[in-house]
Amino acid sequence: MRNILRFVLLGTLCLVLGGCGLFIKHIPQGQIMYPTPMDHFIKVGDVNFHYREYPGKGEDVFLLHGFASSTYTWEGVAPCLQKRGYHVWALDMKGFGWSDKPEGAKYDPITLMEEVNQWMDVMGIEDVTFVGNSLGGAIAVVMAIEHPERIGRMILIDAASYNQTERPLIVRMAGLPFSRGFAKLFFGRWARYSIILTA
Image (cartoon, rainbow, N blue to C red; front, side):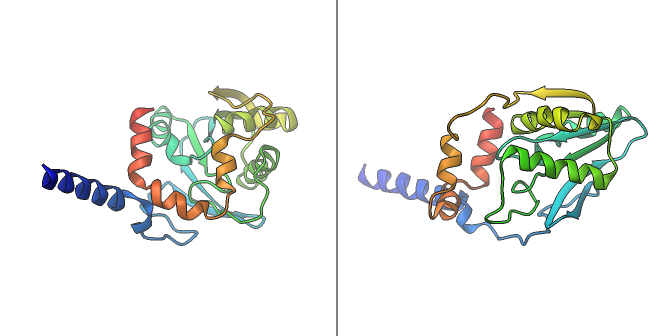
């Protein structure tokens, strides 16, 4: 019985260490693990932004992800919209996905919204159908107030649009010393896929 328990514990330890982020190859900024023809980069100000473009002859549809997410939120939706003729854009905001993550930069919703606005300026996108999920939904609302010419229609999915007096626990934890190493230890690719599968 003791040998079986040791075997189970050893197997569990191997699975945990094999699936954690400590052993995942570091990818330099500006590179993508599995690039597709839709993946692009453009520098706006000091930030190198990653975005996906799905060309179409119809109206522009802009997809903006939520907190701790990226353009991959939309990888099942964007091709469907493109097939219906829409020109689809999806952006990784600063600090998310494959876009730059400068240390010491501002990551508040107003700053992120202004950076999204600047990116849209550079790309020549106006009067879009703006689809925002979570944090992206909050940014869509602020964008509609500050830059109404950008938005023809707005779709909000679980938008974070209420005033929070305190930052969420996960955000506070991200600011702790050694949080990057801790996250690599416990949050490998397996965690991301398990969250997606159970959501």
